Image 1: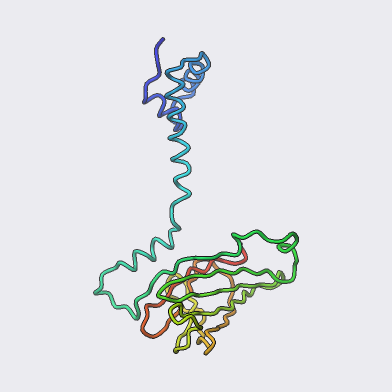
Image 2: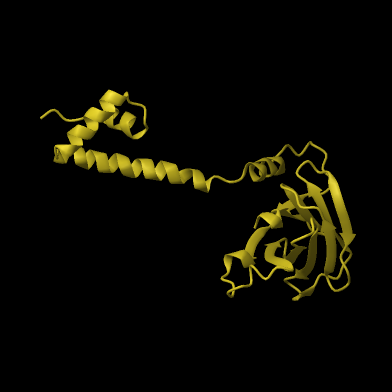
Length: 206
């Protein structure tokens, strides 16, 4: 019995073969060739792995932002920044029955950490309104208290277009109202630290 070549199998699983060749390969499998069935299973696993690999690719806007962070030091920069790490997302937690469809207000909470700070963000929007309400609080992890030195928060686009800015209160709290959009960034700026940058996903798409 003539067995299928690796090239034939590779083309078959990538969908590159001519229809008559693909039909012949299916007929060959139907005849029960154990050697080719083993090769078929191996190539099938390769295809599944390659298909799933795309799901692990980072968003393009994050890739561009990280590349900017490694840009030449000769480029002028107002303040160095650190990309925050997500440590909690309420949408990843199970909700009680009926909570998502309760109607009047929709809430979303996320917590980020960077530069010794914990940033607690709570988003809300009414179903009949375009505005998104963001209430946040910033904590100093080392002092185990709200951030108390002079600090501010900025909301901007990926191209550094400033949309809103506000000061952080003595209790570490702040409030921002904005129109939902894609590729927004929140920057927490405090003296003696890099700015903490947080990607803001459109809450209405959650």
